[in-house]
Image 1 (cartoon, rainbow, N blue to C red):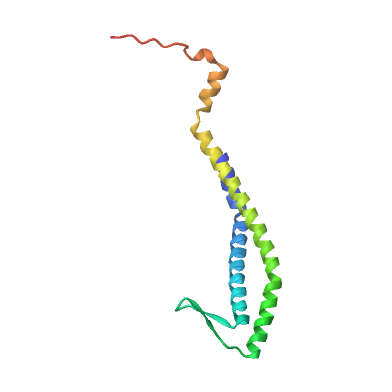
Image 2: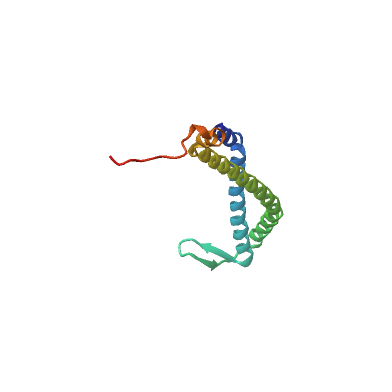
Length: 135
């Protein structure tokens, strides 16, 4: 029954995992875009081949487009951050509940609950002493 509850929990909340993954990718992409646009304002660009930041000259249209994109991304950053944090917390809490259900299942399946119950309710079924004799 507990294993069935665990499987139902995972299947019923798969959409939350998908949404959390989408917001994680969106947040990561937005951070990369903001860093790139920030380098544009500073007159720098990232040189991937040499693993360094080089200087660069831009014209006014590039700076204007960069400024518009930067402000749009900056204003949307808090919204995406809040959604990302909400779905991340929700996803982690669902995973914690799944771990608790799994731990409960493993504990119940490995503990001799029937024998413990029988020992506490009907102790006369068990012997009190065991005598061993040499042959």
